Length: 449
Image (cartoon, rainbow, N blue to C red):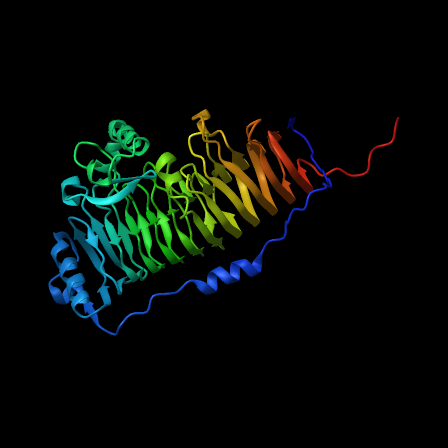
């Protein structure tokens, strides 16, 4: 049902039990469970190992040596002082290390794809493959951090950007491998397949801190939290405007706190994922879950997104006290389709301030109109205390399937001052709306004349 240029104030009661209160106690439980890394007193300044912050010298070997020294000393802090440090190739983490990039320091990666070989096991848009190494890569590490007030520059705007128009063969091959359950050892892409690497990837890691750094010019996704848990991301900022520059992508991730982040990236600010299609459904024991997002400033394509690669399921997500600092296409966006399966459930969003968007709240089970045979379950989603100045397309969109309806959606205290279309709700049941105003608030009815 659609309403155009319309005030919409609706209070309705329903007969089913639906918990709509924001579960602050659950949030506290998750945050208190997350462990911050603790480091030994050993420190190494990369300039003491011969690093030059002249923006020209290749410091790859120095960072490798610093990591090796930390491994030998059972951990420590690698200090990157003021300067621009060129690194022609990836930095691979070891456990118990804090990479501290000080104010005025920049790590500037090369954009030569050959520098990121040999390939490593990674994930590309929800499918496990061997591909170019992420620029910063941690595999099976624990107690690790990237901190400081410096910058990581991925140099993604020229060579890596050119990969976008050439990626279809590799992308389609990866999806065929997913659907056909090709063994991991045979999923070798890399050179010639044009699948861009992530800027930072933590893969099968735990007790992670990313704090206060600035991320610029990523080749692809900026910060990928893959099969990892006990993660804190706070105080970081972005200027990353290349194709598919998602800000933060938790995927099969558990116990995650994202707070006080200032986004400015060309795609989703936070995109919560959990694998794609057949492979994702096979990993249903490890959904993305227990994720807290709070006190963030959104700017980019979409604010908080769940999907579309979410086939193992996403649950227990809590978003609060966030606002936009510029245009967003969509504020809160839940997206899946009939290829995915899995579920999205127990999602709570409150106290969000949006300025101008295309759509304020968008929930769809038919993303891109694709797929068949694996419709997703979307249920138990609560939105409260949300304001928006303008929605150039729609205020609220809910799209299920006739035989797989979206269920138990609560909209409480929502005010959208202007929308081209107020509400479009199809194939949804148990939708509770209370104090929802789209357009000008109605007053007492006028008298007959």
